[in-house]
Amino acid sequence: MPDIANFLSKVSVSAIPVILAITFHEAAHGYVASKKGDPTAMMLGRVTLNPIPHIDLIGTILLPGIMLLMGTGIVFGWAKPVPVNFRLLRDQKRDPIYVSAAGVVTNLGLAAVSGIVYRLLIAFLTNVQAEAMAGGVPASSEMMFRGALFLASMCKVSVGINVLLAVFNMIPIPPLDGGRIAVGLLPPRASMALASVERYGMLIVLVLLMFGPLGIIWHFVQAITSFFLGG
Image (cartoon, rainbow, N blue to C red):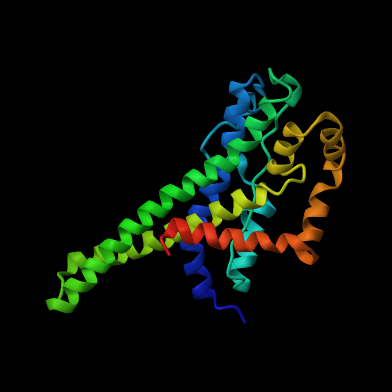
């Protein structure tokens, strides 16, 4: 039987980092697309850091909640994809690369910032613990300790989810960002061949993740996450 108290505790730590990661990811796509000539996302109100327009019932709420409830050890999710009309981009070869890379770059940036804040909080917590061992700390410091511990936990989750989103999206299979980047970088014939698999792309990715060599991405996720956390 699931431990509801433990589940609620995990939700309180994980909800904000997950929502921010996917919101910033999608908003970044829309923002860069608008700068490159496609106003679609801007007109539909998707170039915003308000998470509500980006929320997907399954990917943003149900899947992360189920993963937390089942104690999978990781949290993953997605938002509603930002609509991009690639035909409106000014440079049909180069600009899709920028639009596709925007989400990944944004997630890595969030991971880096979260990692820095995490290290600062850990340094603070270590200092408070040393003072407590030396002779106790006032109640105000104890409250600050608990608050810092909660924020450190959120930052740790933020690093993990942002790195996971960045690495996962760099798999070079469309419609993932890495696939669209590869389509933009490859020679015409190879580019067209890769683009043609987009309708089956997510199915291919899921199959490879379950049965094939793409399980190696978890090693990249762990290594990059450890780097940002200073571990």
